[in-house]
Length: 213
Ligand SMILES: [Zn+2]
Ligand SMILES: [Zn+2]
Image (tube, rainbow, N blue to C red):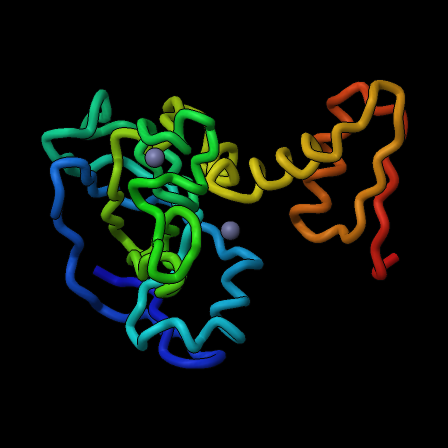
């Protein structure tokens, strides 16, 4: 298959690499139909390069169609349309039961003291091949997926992988009282989504601040 691989600082390329295969009964293989480039990918492009090897597949915001499943993937079926979140989570450990999925104890990368394993995000997060590729192996697939309906186009769903819940959580943590005011500093994609999310809540005033008028 074709995949976007990291080759060095500020250097990525599209290469032909081996197709992923089922390695564990909890794995699924997804045929990717859409995938985003994230601001977080810029960290890999620059400063986190020390934690990648040439050939590592990037990408953590994909969606697609389930192509193949292991024997322990719950109700996930071949043909299901799914968004794959940034982090891999089992859904049944202590942390997952507290809904702290990004700290999943089953996939946690303890050697580097980080949280749950992340797709395409360096040795610090498990060096798991990412989703800027034609196919993706999804570990802990019984829980690491969001099923979405057929019909609407991919761009209606693909932001569920990272940016939309990240923005949602930022607004939730701000915990603005009804009738209060929210200030959002920085209007990149996350800040922009924070403003839009805030406008769906009983927040009286949303003020967006950015260097670009
Ligand atoms: Zn992202
Ligand atoms: Zn877990």
